[in-house]
Image 1 (tube, helix red, strand yellow):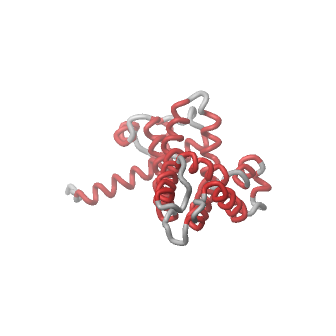
Image 2 (cartoon, one colour; image 1 turned 90 degrees about the horizontal axis):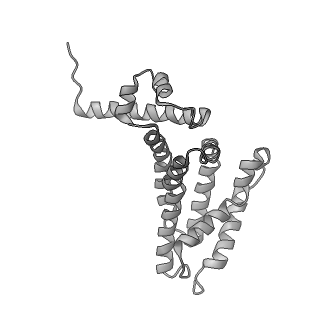
Length: 211
């Protein structure tokens, strides 16, 4: 007897299958590199056909973009919660900075960053895909919030895009680079102290004189 799935169950199964594809693809990209990962190897690891895989993602480039999207979506929602006015500008910046460092210093993010740096010369499209779907979106979200802070008088007037780049750079100036270059020493650094220094330095230049 043929089993007929309800539309809701079919959609749930498709979502589960898509998630499984993304998990395998992410692991393959990080372990093998972009060049040595193929749709065939991913399909083989999944235990299905390339035709099934292509029905979800028509190309390796689109699959890689989907992996990046899946990694940033939850993070962006967390950023929205961090950038609330509760506690004032400094408190929101601290929450943002902590989320940012937790994210960029995670093992998977470090591995992805190294992958992009290693392969972007040969495959410029993956560098562009990563930038537009990851760092650019984070900066744009922070800049949008800063625009509101400027309009409300809590930050001085200026270019919010520049302000966002500067604050992210300050947050990453300490333990993040240690994590990239001296991983054995990174654990000894104090993220909270780095974030406090970033907030203090940033607000010295960007706080409203009337605040």
